[in-house]
Each structure stands twice: as C-alpha cells, then as structure tokens.
Length: 286
Image (cartoon, rainbow, N blue to C red; front, side):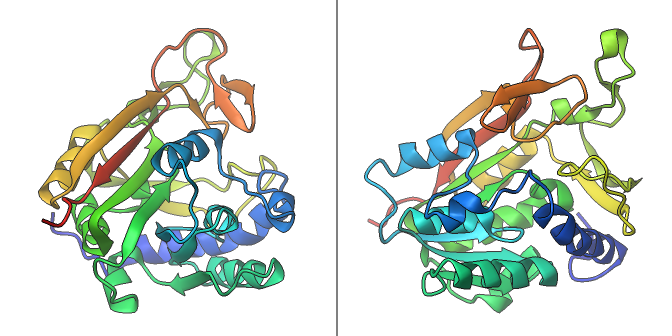
C-alpha cells in the first residue's frame, strides 16, 4: 500500500484529536483512575480474562510492550499486576499524563512511556526480541493505514515464544452507524473493506456525550479480519487463539445497552459480533 507513514494530514489530524481528548477523558467518569490509585486495575472484562488465560500464575516479571497506550490506564493496570511495561503513544499530552500517573502511584520504575507514532517505534525503542507480550486493545489499528507494517513491528519486538494479545471492535459491526435503521437499530454506512480512509468531522467523543471537540477531523481505515490475520501470518506469527464477542467496553451504538462492568451489547439477541480478540505468538527458539 503506497501510504506516507511518517507525515501528512492523517497523522497530524489524528494526533491533534487525541491530544484534545486527554483532558476530556480525564474529566469523564468513563476513565475512572481510582482503581489504579488503590493498586488495582481498569482492564475491561474481555482483556482481563484474556491476560489471565495467558498468564494464570500472574504477570510478575513479565515484560510488556503496550502499543497505542493512550494515557496508560491499561498499561498501569498491567504494572499493578506485576508486569514491567513500556507504553508507546503518539500524543504528547497522553504520554505526559501517563508518566505523571505512574509517578503518582509509585510505579515509575516499572512503567516507561515513550512518545512515538507507532510506525516510528523501532527508531524510538530499538530493542528487538525483548518483550514477552505485546498488548494492543480497542481502537488501535483503525487509526493506521498499513496493518501489515503494524504486524511486522509487533513481531520485531517479541521474544521467541512471545505473544501478541489483541482485542478490537469487530469490522463487521463497524460498517454500521447511528440509530436510523429499522426498529432504531444502526444502519449500514461504511465499507467493510477499503484502502481509502474514512475522513470524518465529528466533534463528539465516546467517553463524554456532551463533549464538543475543536479538533474534530479524524482519519480511519477499515481492516477486515482476513487482512489482520494475513498480516500477522506474513510477519511470522502463528495464530494461537481467536474469539468473537458480542460486547464492547463502550456504547458503540445508541441501541446497545449496559451489560455491567462497563460493557455494552445488543438489547436482546446476538445479532452479530461486536468485537474480537486474538492471541498470536512467535515460534519458540530451537
């Protein structure tokens, strides 16, 4: 795919939007930091269960790379479980808050945060084959034009036998929007697969329905599941687990309802999956 990865309007617009969202998110109830201050965590139920399956004996001493970590709430949740975490995010405001919070809760010695566009990660953190786990969840690859390069970066950082844990909104569900379909359900608005980005001007924010962002223009890409799986395979990773879910940790459509623990799903039947998670691993050393 011929996309300029290091500069351009897509990166500048998206970064400006996420910089502005930091203040909105910190002021919202959506991102409750109290559990972190109490030594706990804020991982959503899907990711929490996924990590517990991968590391049933705990995360003590596990080295984690968290890609597109926002202001590090999930990173610090893993740190509070015993991990040593490096978080990467392209937003200066987010990285500054992540560092501040790590210092506040006394874990800065095990939580390092780096400001970088994910495509520049290898320049900012030149540590190949150094992580037991790469962690990336919820609203990550939809902001990236080239998922094949993302997969190569993941593979580059993992130790032999290391794993990627990935959870994301299901691309089938992401073709829908709004509540103007039959019975108040969302209607089809976006393509399931397209190499062209959707350039949106939406001042709203998922964490605060009343927020009106000044930097409202964003660029997003659709990445079908076969594209993601193919990218991981081509990067040398082996699929270990794949699961579809009928819930997500945000109110993805007006028609979805609260299910508890911050999760949202369909009001009655499982019409179609809303999210998926996968685990992929590098081959073990001989």
